[in-house]
Length: 109
Image 1 (cartoon, rainbow, N blue to C red):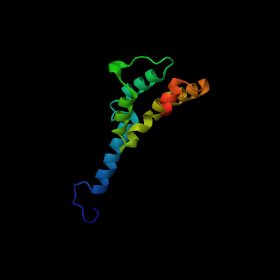
Image 2: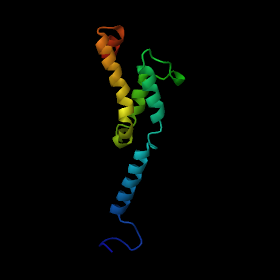
Image 3: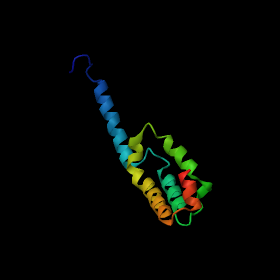
Image 4: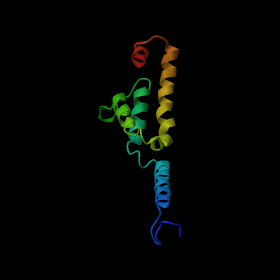
């Protein structure tokens, strides 16, 4: 048994590795980013052309507040970033092609 550890007790290193494995598994399944589906639905609805009303009147402010809560845990967001950022980038591209519109001015503020 490694020096400083007691038989039958997990070492701090083993506990850390076990915890990291649990977080990685949970992150891969998206289970720790509880609002993932609602964030993706909201972004998709708000960036559609024309925008579609969202459940509960959700807004981009709600999306930002929700995502910011996970700022210190980016591994939880990573599996969902493409689904969140993709619609945003398509909307920016669509508005850029349209040129100077009220929507573009609002987006760029």
